[in-house]
Length: 338
Ligand code: NAD
Ligand code: DAU
Image (cartoon, rainbow, N blue to C red; front, side, top):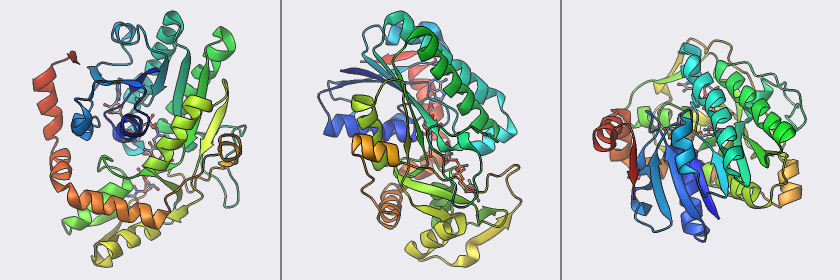
């Protein structure tokens, strides 16, 4: 199968491409990415010369870019998005642009070119904050409450509409919080690791008792592959790890594994509208596709910390924004590698 992966230079997208190239090499992969601040080709540098991998610098909001890239692809997996809640609170417009408008451009192009399968990557945040004991099912009502979550929920509606109205073969996934190698150090786990390594304060929003379900990124990517190959058209699949932790628990475990003092923990002003808890029910994908996560939170966190310890140059360069300038100089506004 020839698969176009949008956002493949980002955190989950690059891990997904890595899984395919290493474990399922029968597929041809095109990585289509705008290389925003979050996109980093270094994430796949060791695999970039494989004959079944190519990279196209392009924007999902630009239909010409997209039409050129998808001329003979069988499937699109849409990771491309603005993904950070705090940034969406500062400015929501880029989120509407990439996450909503960009998704619609992709859907239109996919329909016009007769792409057989469209996998859209969504999030458990579309369900909003949940009380302890409540879980988001595939048919739950959506109550997105941050601008990021609102943009992801809006995109879901357009994906649904493309299937319902035009018969496009679409499948959607909603995943909980991912962590692991190559995550941009603005998100909780890599930020805390990076700050702890430099003995800098670890900023904890509010009381730090907000709860997330944490999944190791490789487990999520395997689930996404199962959905791509075996997921039923028109369905939504929740992907969760049943590993709920509050933020302080996560941070204290990181400090323990890095042998750093809890004194680094610094309580700061809460995130406006902060969702207290997400909880997702992954029973459908477990029963229907036989998928289950394989990495426990403790194992995954240890693997993640080891990766950041072994890749401190990546971390430093990513933190300093070096890559962005480098790629802009090297590839310009539009570039085709290979
Ligand atoms: P990320 O921010 O690390 O990567 C996003 C990638 O998309 C970057 O490479 C960026 O350059 C690219 N991109 C952004 N706008 C683009 C555009 N207009 N055209 C082409 N490329 C563009 O994000 P991530 O954490 O890897 O998340 C990937 C997807 O998974 C997103 O759709 C996100 O909403 C979803 N998701 C993430 C998580 C999580 O915990 N990280 C959980 C659930 C769902
Ligand atoms: O639930 C899935 C979502 O998980 C994805 O859709 C998003 O793309 C992804 O960014 C993530 O959203 P969160 O807002 O949950 O992730 P973040 O890492 O930003 O924050 C996790 C928790 O940690 C949240 O309760 C806010 C808190 N936090 C975060 C940062 C960056 C802090 O207390 N301090 C911080 O500095």
